[in-house]
Amino acid sequence: MATAVVHLLRHGQVHNPDGVLYERLPNFHLSALGRQMAARVAEYTKDFDLVHLRCSPLERAQETMEPVAANHPRVDVITDPRVIEASNRLAGQAFAGKLSQVLRPSVLTKLYNPLRPSWGEPYALIVARMNAALHDAAEAADGHEALIVSHQLPIWLTRRAAEGRRSVHDPRKRQATLCSLTSFTFVDGRITRVDYAEPARDLLPATNRAAQRKLVAGA
Image 1: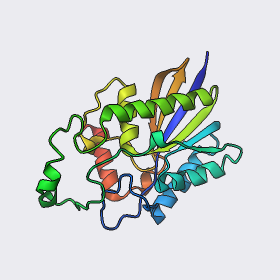
Image 2: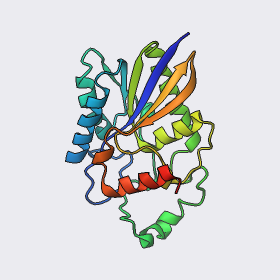
Image 3: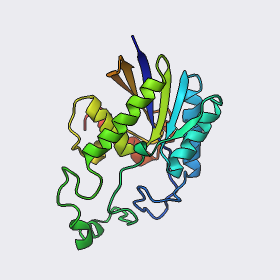
Image 4: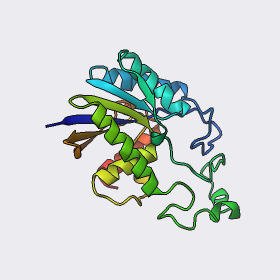
């Protein structure tokens, strides 16, 4: 029986004082808190049986991987564009939570179909590329564990697909906080279990912790 566990790790907090929707834009790095989160999850995973490491090409993901990889120096890190953040036609804009900015005609014309979604990469394509990378990692880690650093939306969609749920969802209810681990157990090439952990939960900004408490409570 072939078994493996593949952990999807979301990157740490990004330095983004202007509230830019950065998506795939370059030069968005971890904040000081984000590096602290990465160090925390590295400590959490140091005794994992990791034999395969894979990472999104974006800086924040690479920087989150660094301390994890340092604890597993015999394992090379593969940069995999399939686990990158979703593309978004609104990238580079700063909304800062203001409804008036969301209602601008240049924005509204991109929001006509939330089921696809019309403003970015189709959910189905995200799931397809993530699943391909996930299964490749499981095969490479046969009998052991693998870890992939990716991003919130791709991780959440991958989990929903594994659990037989639709891709369409409320973004406010995603369970994939900063430096969280969503772990997939594979048996003979099939996902048989999904687990979730938040090693850096106490480091999350207060608003994130409050939102997560509501989600766990079913609010």
